[in-house]
Image (spheres, rainbow, N blue to C red):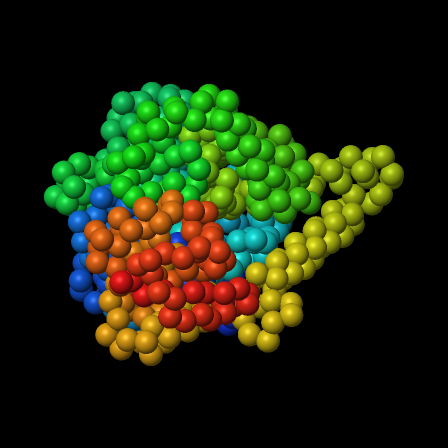
Amino acid sequence: MRTWRWISLFILGLFVAGLGCIWIQSPGYMDADYYFATGQELSRGRGFIEPFIWNYLDNPSALSHPSHLYWPPLTSLIAALPMTFFGQTFRAAQIPFILMSALLPVITAALALQIHGNRSWAWFSGLLALVPGFYLPYMLTTDVFVVYALIGAGFFYFTGRGLRNGRNGAWLVSGMMIGLAHLARADGLLFFLPALAAVSCSGERKLQRFTILISGYLFVMAPWFLRNHLIVGTLLPATGAKTLWLRSYPELFSYPSSNLTLRHFLSQGFGAILQARFAALWINLQRLIGENGLVMLGPLMIIGFRELWQAFETRLAAFYLVILFLTMSFVFPFAGSLGGLFHSSAAMMPLLWALVPAGLHRVIQWLSHLRRWDEAQAQRLFAVTIFGMTAMLTVGLYVTKVIGIQSNTALWMGPKRTYDAAAETLAELNPDYGIVAINNPPGFYVSSKKGSVVIPYGGEAELHRVVDRFAVEWLVLDVNHPEGLTDLYQGQAKVSWLEERAMLLDHNNEPVLIFEVH
C-alpha cells in the first residue's frame, strides 16, 4: 500500500478513538477500575500493591496486599506510564489506549497484506478495524482489549514471517508476543500451542527455533516470575487454579477461598458439571457470532478462512480459536461465558478483519456468475455497503452502551456517579469512616481513595466472617448483591449487627443501602 494510505488509517483511527473517548470519562466497570487503580499506585511509586480486596483467592492477610495475583500486570503498567508524567487522572491513563486504538487499523492492514498480498483487501481490513462493533468502548478504557488485539496481531504476523523466511529474529519476536500475551492475560499461555505447532511445521532447526521462541518468552516474563517467586514462593500464583473448582460464577468471591477444592467441585454431581459446560458452549457460540462476527461479518470470515486456508497465519488462527473456545467453555465456563471469551478473542480480531475481504470476494464472484453482474462494480458496491453497515452498527452499539438513548448524562459514567455519591454519603455520616464492604472495591477506591473489601459469596454468616477478619465498619449493598443477602436488600430481614443509615439511588434508579456495622 502507498504511504498515504498507512498514514490515513492512523489519522482516521485517531479521529475515531478521540471522538469515542469523549463520553468515556471513567473506567466504567470493575476490570478497568482495577487496572486504573493499580496503575495509579504504580505511578505514585508504591509498587504492585492493591489497597483493596476484590476477591479472597490469594488469602489476603490485610487490606493492602500484593497486587496482580489474579489479573496480570501489563495493562496496569501501560496505564501507569502516562500517569507518572501527567498526573493520576483517568484522562492521562487513557492516552496509550487511544494511541493503540489508532494504531490498530494500521497493524490490521499490515497483517492482512502479509497473509494475502492484496493491497485493496488490506485497506478494507484496516477500515473495518476503525469500526470494531462491540469492542469500541472497551478499547478506549483502561482494560486489556486493544492491548490484546495488538499482541494477537503481532503473534500471527511474526510467527507467519518465521514460517515463511525462517529467520531467527521472527521467532524471537513471536516468543516475546507470547510473553506479552501472558503478561496481559493468564490465558495468554494458550498462544504457546499454535506456536509449538508452527515450530513443528517449520522444517529444519526445530530445536533451535523452539529455544529462540522460549528465550523471547522468558525475556518478557522472567522479571514477573521473579517477582511472584519473591512474593508467593512460586513462579505463577495459585489463585487462578482455584477457579477450576467453581460451581457458579459468584463463588469467585468465596471466603475463605480454601473451600474451593476438587471435592467441592465434584460434590455437585457430573450432571451439573456437564450442564454448566454445555450451557457455556452455547453462550460462547452466540457471543462469537454476535460480538466477534457482528452476525453479518461472521459468514464472510468463515468463507475467508476457507479461501485463505493455505496461509500459515490463517491455520494458526483457526487452531488458536478452537483452543480458546474450548478452554472458555469447558475449563473456565463461568468466567468464559461471562466475558472471558470476549476479552481473549480480541486477539483474533485483526486476523478476522483480514479475512473479510477474501470472503466477500468469493461471495461476489459466485453471485456475479449467478446473476451476471459486473463483478468489479459489485465488489466495490458491496464493500462500501458492508463497511457502512458495520459503521452504523458500531455507532448504535456505542450509543446504547456509553451515551444512553434516554439519558441526559453519559450512561458509561453511571457506576462512577453512584460510587461518588456513596463515598460522599459515607463522609457525611462519618468523615473518618473506615473499611467498607462493597460490590466493586476497585471502583470504590477510584471514587473515594478509601479501602474496601468485596462482599463475599453467601449470606449473613459469610459476611460476618469478613467483617470480623478485616475490621469492616460499613456495608454498601446495591442491586448486584449475593443471593444470600437478598432479604436484607429488600427489607424483608434484619441483621442485629447492621444498622441502616442511608439509602440512595444508583444510575439505574435502583436502591443503594448503606449500613453501619455494630
